[in-house]
Image (cartoon, rainbow over all chains, first blue to last red; front, side, top):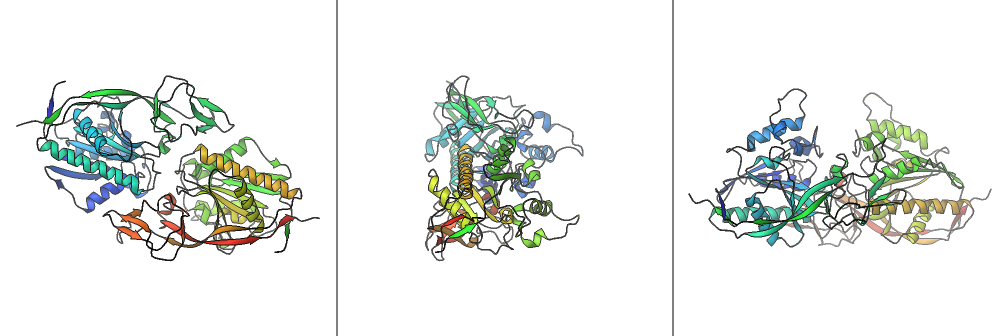
Length: 309
Length: 309
């Protein structure tokens, strides 16, 4: 595989509070802003509390999930009196950190999220980006206290709906389990470690270090599964089975239990072998998702270094 | 100690959704209502979704915490256009299940709650009530999958602020850890087991069984501790220390770590030996409570049986 090179990363944006009740990112950004950290070695730092109104009331969002508002369609939608707050805020953030897909966009965006699912530390990315994959490889090699995994959402960048897609390079960090509205020291410390390692990697990259190629495993999103529901009321008729609960990324085989109904019946997995994740995530009840399913893939990544002027 | 007797329990109210995002009670009540369970042996059953508007939007409350609205003062407050929804709802529930302190009140109320704290199964009660303590003893003797504990909030009944205080006898069931807005099978099954055991005890009691006296341990609420906060913004400057997190009911001794600041300093417990509970409960951030502290006490309970006509 060829060696690849990219220009130095001169602008790095660290975002949190994109979901106002995911406390790790909220406090990560607040602490950075208290320290007035604007420069670290060769890189300028912007820290952004993405959805301040939702943070104020400790809700995921005010009118609409902000982290679904960064498609090209939303970012170019005309603003009227009826435009949801989060669509307006997405356009503001796109002006500040983008515009998405342009030369003016910041070099790297990292957005912090929490989940109630037992997912450990995950980096989430869209299309293949060798630089992001190298940062993942670096973080994974250093963090040993929790599993570190890579999730790929296979969408063209124009349809990529989340905040970090505005950057030239980007990833979301998802850490759990942590209840909404709660700040846990263990989860915060893992997030802080991942951020420090990202900074460390950027300094090495910018100063000319070369990083060897490798192969990394990723979970490639395949489909979503909803809870069994009462067709008239929409209320759940079953919950995640105890054997699936907290077992994110444990291979689901045909016949494995996935739901337990209130009347005591077990619903079994009846498709192909796939890996469940975001199992029983709080915010996905309204999205009609009990869990996602992924295929495990291997990505060969080339060696990388900064472009020499 | 003397033997005590009470009239049969002919009316039992099972409540859930008093906090609209505590899902165990919401689904416990929904399932009872689907089954149209109105009578079980010698007892009539009422199941009540206490705060339906909060349940609809999966929030703890709409205007005001409903489970702080059952003091005599709130229950007798005149209703105006400015009265919070939950105060009106508390008066409705008092009319349906009470009136509090009267002969017309239902015999027993059990209200289901969840916490994000690692508290296992707790029964919470106010003033000493031998009948409630016998139900606790019965549940504790049968449930082995999680710790079962008893919490006493020492308030006169007129100041007792929670829904169950409307009943002649009453307790709240608090189960955790479970994130707000999430329904876990393991937590639901423990709640269901506690409810089934309560029903079983009532049937035995009503049919003339005598229950022996005993001594039970209880945690008597002593005081609350807030998070260290920035005095101007109110934002946290420290989180629950990893050594305290998830260690509800583990004796705190002077010098034990309780908070970890964002700058890495440990704050230590400096008072008397006490037992922490509701450690890092989501809903208590706004109440300025990081955890409660309790003294362990022993309550001698007399033997009990139904009053013979």
